[in-house]
Image (tube, rainbow, N blue to C red; front, side, top):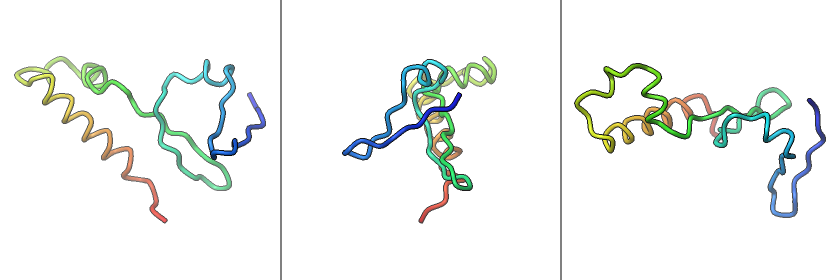
Length: 85
């Protein structure tokens, strides 16, 4: 699928509905790749992400602790490869 997209006067990029329907995530990291822009999805629910890894990792920890650990890991992994200019 290809669409021509433009920025509005506030610098926002609008994604048409047919593109948004195709995307399974709502949170992304934007990364420049070559001459283009790459959107890397980020899991929005860290507990869901952890549960996919296995139930044993969830034992003996509070939900609050699990959320903190998951968010920290997601942020670390998401920002690890981003180049700072």
